[in-house]
Length: 147
Image (cartoon, rainbow, N blue to C red; front, top):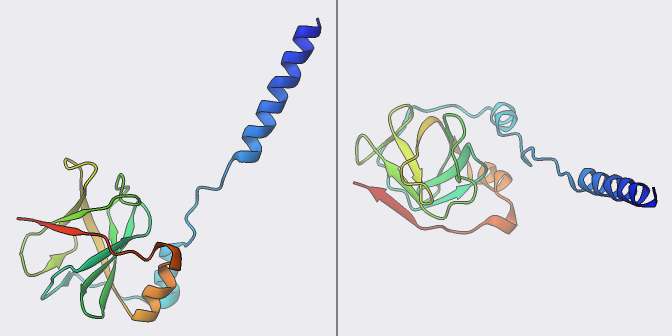
């Protein structure tokens, strides 16, 4: 009988610990709300494109630097595995000098067989980019272009 009581207390303690450790998995920033509140206008493509850097925001959004002071918020269609934690982003482009929504895609280094199609592209001002990127995660990550 004592064993059953001890096991019940242990199970209750484990359950309470699991509930206390549950974290909210929602993103820090609601990117769709940011797009609306900032009045960002979608563009179908980036011309004269040459990626110099990128910064992941979550599994659907990232920021790309196309050249000096040309930043874009990019949304992929659906969930893109490992986009949030990947170190290398490869571009699959229909035209080498531009990046187009609906036609081009990205591949994260950890899963080379998983292409994530670009859904939307939004130009960002420097201030808007700074709002989206936290100071702790500002890091330049290497980029590769898939030929």
